[in-house]
Length: 176
Image (cartoon, rainbow, N blue to C red):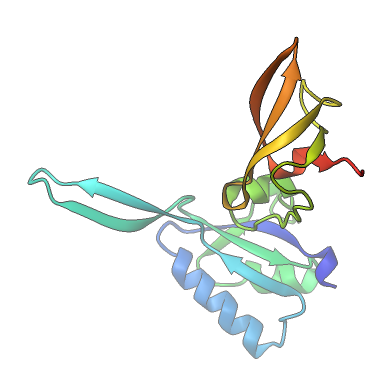
């Protein structure tokens, strides 16, 4: 069932995000819904402020106040469970009875889930560029930064070698 689970956005009263998350977690546990409601997330960002006195203060701030993200298998039961939690005002979507799941691109952009990319090339390998204006060009891998989802490729254009930055999944190794 986990493969049909999608991320949905639940709208809450402002300031109730943590309470709603805790209540959903308790409800999932007590009703044995772990196979239907898989994850609950409140996206946070770390913010550093410099006060007037020059002291820096670091804290976590909600990226989307008033919203909780829930990865679940959508059904009448899961809709009913979430809809009846105190502090929940509804789902984000075309209507509160028909919530719209987030697309994979939205989920990755929000940082809720990370895409696992298997890198099967190394520095010095020849690769084919798969995406963008340089698609079909061949280049040599110069640098790989897996943690930043970056690969630098040296491409020969107009008789000159140029280093171009790509995302890890925008290139593939050329089989020798």
